[in-house]
Length: 166
Ligand SMILES: C[S@@+](CC[C@H](N)C(=O)[O-])C[C@H]1O[C@@H](n2cnc3c(N)ncnc32)[C@H](O)[C@@H]1O
Image (cartoon, rainbow, N blue to C red; front, side, top):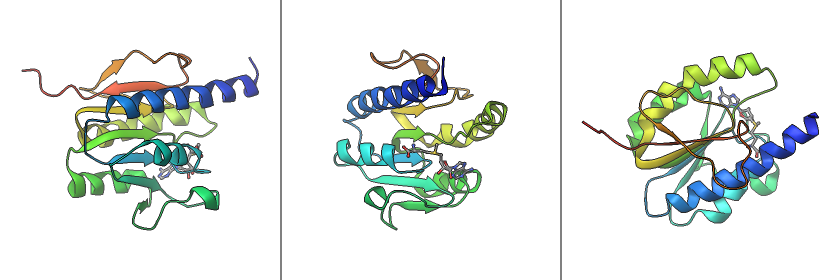
């Protein structure tokens, strides 16, 4: 499998998982968090299809296409290892949807980073909220759910906050 194949699978999976997660969480009112702006393609997709929910973008250095750059009020600038704990203090467990695409080319580092930020992300999700990630995450209480049609296994992961069961 070529890098082009992998890239295309990732893009197709991101769109399938985002479309699924946006629809599944449409009844929730809490904010949508986009972790990692990059070029702004997935932010633009979220902005296009999410209705009636505020969107916040977490990014350490803005370098997006000007056509898909969030407003200052939508931007939470800084390293997510600092800004996610701040977001918990600001928003509490209210996020309806969190999308993370923070990984780089080093797969080992991506795993280490995902392990570090999983406990920072987990408490932000509202009950019924979904988390979509390009990397496998390491949550204690979130449930990994089946991928929607069109997503490629291993290229995207979807987790749900089911709430307390006891
Ligand atoms: C792969 S790109 C995101 C691409 C985006 N989904 C798109 O469609 O254009 C990853 C982004 O995550 C950001 N990032 C990586 N680690 C970060 C961290 N610790 N804190 C904040 N942003 C981070 C990088 O700066 C980069 O812009």
